[in-house]
Image (cartoon, rainbow, N blue to C red; front, side, top):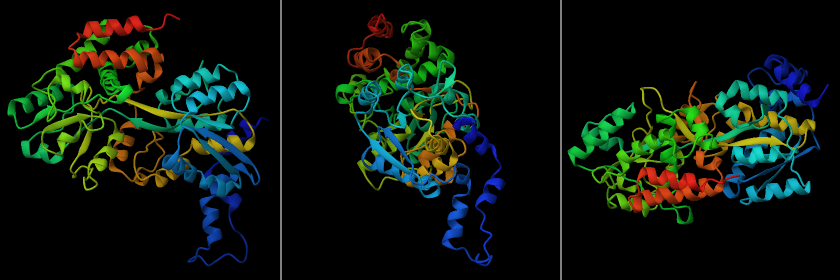
Length: 458
């Protein structure tokens, strides 16, 4: 029987059976009203008994997380190390995406790699070095993630990588106090959002939207998130997938309609750009600062990812983020009530080795055990779509909100489209042409035609 089958069968065992393997039956056991450190550790490690004693074994992990983020990931591995006896040798690198292909070509492979996006995973799978996910990992993915997440870790019908962390970009930041003072309600549909935008403009207290897409050499990328959200809402997930893969042209009429819907909000001087300037100022305002007019009472709304929460405390540590705080967020609504499609990102765990300790570590990372450990190690700015996570362990209310959205049953999630497109487009013409869209007033049709012309021919 393969290592994969053994781990899979072990994971299928009941918790009661696992606990019995590590139960303390010694006559020296403490009384019922006392708990010794050893007994506490036994209880904590009960679910790891299935992996056996891995003392002296080492699992190497290569990922993009460095500095404080890397330390938090290493801390999340402590439970696995304590309970199995194995060691995890972690290496983080900001050059991960350029260096992993070099290592694969040279045969200098880590046991585990954490891929920051599905495109690199698919390219690496084509090398023949990545191993299919063990049965236990696939069982966890089927249980704890939606089908769309599983699809992003699958290549040619085979699951190679389990999802790990996630991010949700489809949020609108606002001031609850400003909304209350004006008598505004959080919109539940796209039509309600449009009507609210018009009402804010008519009332004239503050501009509806504040927007900025300047980001140095990456200027324009925040606008791509807007477009992706529009395509997912107005054209749907199937068309979104065709667009990202170029099965339909970039300037398909459905994409044009989505960009025009964005323009109805953002290319109108009545609606933007509070405390900053006119429509053209969107191209030059730093994305990091673009939401700040909200706390000055100059604008009502700013679309940005859940990770924008750190920008508020960067501005002023006293700013409170939460439903009753200075700033809060709501999901960018879909066309119908209760429909909030999500654009985001995520990480995926794949292996180059099938040693028992490696498969055990893969199973751990795909389980709620790891998700809970990572939540406890991270004060803010991390979430997962693993629906087995104990949400109360997330220490930031925004992360809890993102988790609710990402793990909702039937949620229509799509990976950030520009990250999946050829770099000439996703990190080139797409950014550049949307900057021209605001800075020069270039038409929607001309913007999309220029991006379509830049798509690589082979």
